[in-house]
Image (tube, rainbow, N blue to C red; front, side):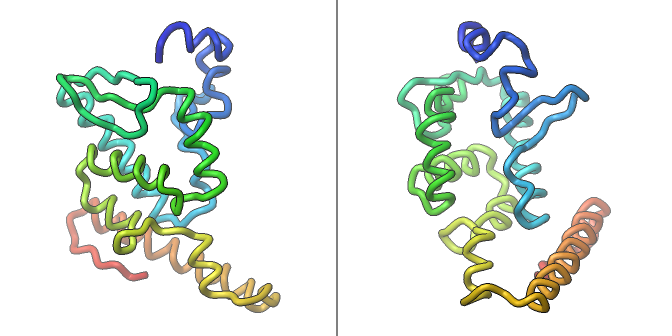
Length: 183
């Protein structure tokens, strides 16, 4: 981030990132914001993707350069060119808020991040065929009308079961056991 942009946003590391999708908090941790209402496997995949991007930038010694007018990630001459702050907080943010992963702008951006990271497991967790997974689409597919209290409770039970499967799969992946998709 350029020094001028840092000061335009308030001049403090915590203040300048207060409402960004990626936020450094007062405890020294990184928050990937806006992913808390999705499936655990998606949260884990996004976390792995963020780590993969950071690892590649460090491994290849790439300079990260925001570029006005850029819409996707691209490596050129030892630099990772990324969309500028105005696009990320403006047009792309609006596209994500109104169209989600169905938005062509959001899909193109995500495709470029996945391509840069090169992690097939993250792509598999985030995509279903050629479309990005969407909690909203899944929920709408399962309910044609407002769910009853019993259907709501069943949804909670299913979410708990899914969380248990995802955490177990993560544990198996860390120990090198074969991981199968139990969803």
